[in-house]
Amino acid sequence: MFYSVLLPCFITLLLSPLSFTHAAHGNETDRLALLAIRAGITTDPLGIMSSWNSSLHFCNWVGITCGQNQRVITLNLSSNGLVGSLSPHIGNISFLTGLNLELNYFHGQLPQELGRLFRLKYLNISNNSFSGEIPANLSGCSNLIWLRLGVNNLIGRIPFQLGSLQKLERVQLHYNNLSGSLPDSLGNLSSVRSFSLAVNSFWGSIPDSLGKLKTLNFLGLGLNQLSG
Image 1 (cartoon, rainbow, N blue to C red):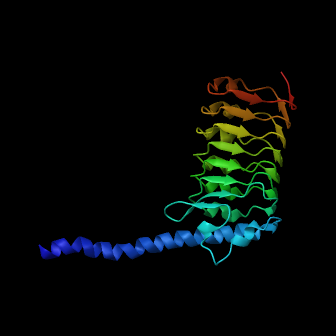
Image 2: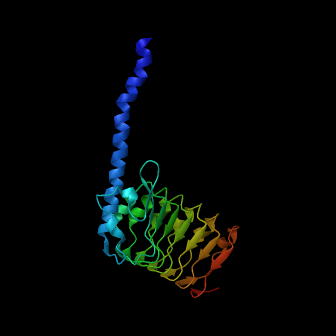
Image 3: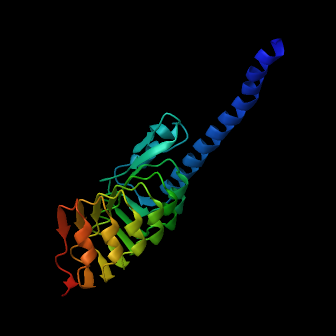
């Protein structure tokens, strides 16, 4: 009986270091990813990146919010005049729920690795200079509520895979260089309330499937080449 009482305690003592090791590994993954993001920033007029150094825990760096497990849950660098590109290492911050880079001068393509952030709810990279196509694997961000990509230099079609994002409520793709026809799959966005596609080069007819969007209260399609 004595051993049966002590045995669970003994097992707990054996397992606890493993859980601490796992947490520490996750923390280090976040830290290295943030340092890679910092390395991609070439101009920092307000000097906010100066706090991103080894003298402070990364949870205390400007723009970072961590959860109780000391993992990064939001990264907010909006309105800081930052110039640079977004590192693919962003995909390693696996607990990220919010990414806001609005009103900066980020350029280059959106990393495919964004599609690995399945916990992500809010993605806002509007008012930058991002180029290239919208990654189709953003459909992997299955909890996404806001997708704000407006006022950039994005090209190509809207990936039909985005129609699988059942939790999306707000979509902003306006003021880009997007083209092609609007995919029928957009009618599957059953939670969407606001959909702004204005000032692009979309052509063809407006899909009948949009009529299924019962929660929609704003639809912006102006200044395109739509017909029918």
